[in-house]
Image (cartoon, rainbow, N blue to C red):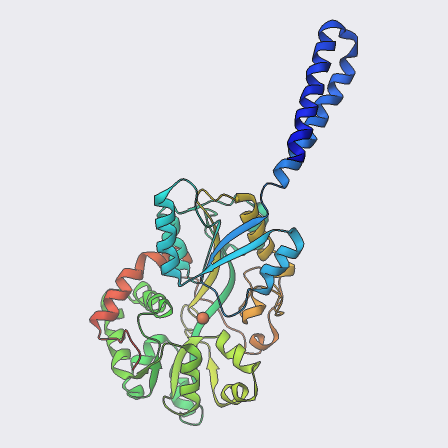
Length: 379
Ligand SMILES: [Fe+2]
């Protein structure tokens, strides 16, 4: 209201000045000053227009993310998070956008590049157009067309119990396909196929091996599974307790256990992590990435948010930074890595399977898992 009143006053002033100009051409310099003042008022109005950012996020591990609060502290922009699974949020985004020309969410943050690439293909996101984002994030961890950028990296790899396995047995497990070996019959825990972590991992088998070989490997793995557990922490605990001898999990759950209470640390100490596929294409990974939603009401805030999270100082390994707060790896190559996960040793990522391709094989992956008799529920 205050700004509007000022605007009216300036407009009146400008009008009076124009009237004077019409009569007295010699006061031209004063006209320039009035024009400048009106512009200032307009700028203030735009800046105070919106201090809100709506985020759909599938990374929700408890309280509001500390880095989101840091963004609010730095910009005054309030971050409102709606949490859900990546595919549920994708469905909400589809519904929002089909309903009207303004989307409910400004930022779509998903823990799966497949979901991000599907959202891109369906036109639910828009290019952020920010050089700051493009230059902060390594090229392999962002959409080449700028529709989304990875902000943290999670690998999916092997955890085993050294007390229940031999060194030779573990040395022989180098690729995910090796889990299909009969050695592991009744000794393997896996996450059910109802979870996107499983769907994406098995889509990488199709990409590397082709449909026929991937299907045979999936059948072999399914026949070795003794338990399906729909929690990676639950899987690691089962390995530690000897319910199974090995499992495939996201690495950051090991980071959390290592930094947890005494019981968690005891679990961590009972198991070992091994990087998979190091003799082949590299360990399977996924990103936690963000894109600006099509027709975002707060476009500038959305871009500022992604720029903030991608910046070197907010990509650090500390608990205050986006990757560090969940023991994930940074996508910004200039950032430092969390100490605990750096201790897991050197490894290479599977860059042969481009993140932008993850979405195209998800349906095939689900069909393959179903046909192989792989479990969709816990047992
Ligand atoms: Fe997770």
